Length: 326
Image (cartoon, rainbow, N blue to C red; front, side, top):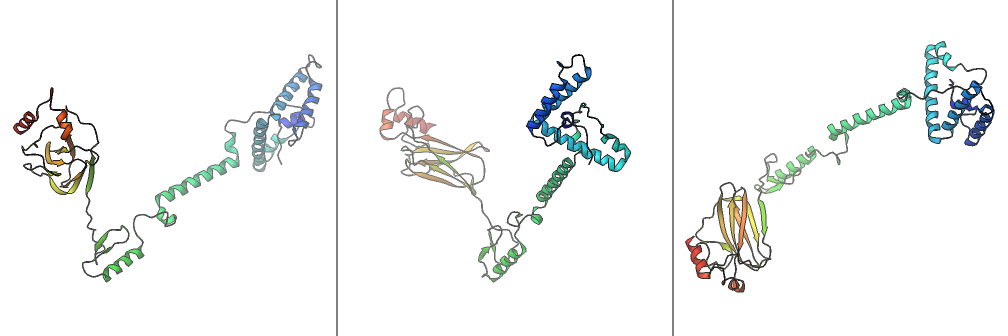
């Protein structure tokens, strides 16, 4: 096998030598070639510098591992050169008959690309990436059916659903299978008759009466007394009728009744006027699809209303007259 000159050769130790042997070899060489014992000897100084470098690398486990990897890479390349270039490759492995330490070149920066392990790792990465792309682009053919359901039922499910539909009485709705919607009997390809309803909810919070903002009038905006129970206020049209939306006004946590106006943001007008009693709920239903804003105002009743009748606030009669006139 091809051999190259290494730091092990500079210390005259085996490549598998333990630290004790490496330390002893370094000590013996340093005693022989130390500059203090060889003053003026340039060869001894050069050898001592090489021995120091070799010991610094081999005494460090991390640097020694890097050196071993470099040796394996270099000798693999030398062996390849010998097998392909004959004498040209053997020139690199010719060793000196007599021991002479010499500098060991550090591994080039891109030396790792010559290692077969590196190429093997790159091929494995490319293969894994290609397999992942194949799995993502065509999952139903590769992945198990339990993990790669593509949104369509298998052929057996469709035929079974069709058989059940053909056996069902006329007019009876049956389960279509894959999407869970029912279709008319015998019409498995017909679109299901599915209705969608947008639902929203307003929860009125409980709070203390506010004499500045709450309604103090005994009359509703149409001039009549407030209704006895929750409902639409007479005299106002019920606009934007449809079947697409509904709004639940939840006033169950508020002891005061509220005046509710449903405002159409597109038409810029109120389309529903409702009175919701305290501790109750009211459903504004049969609404056409659209953009709405729910506006409400507390109505002062009982003792809370009496507390707001004096001082700077309007009297009940004045407030009622103002509301009726406005």
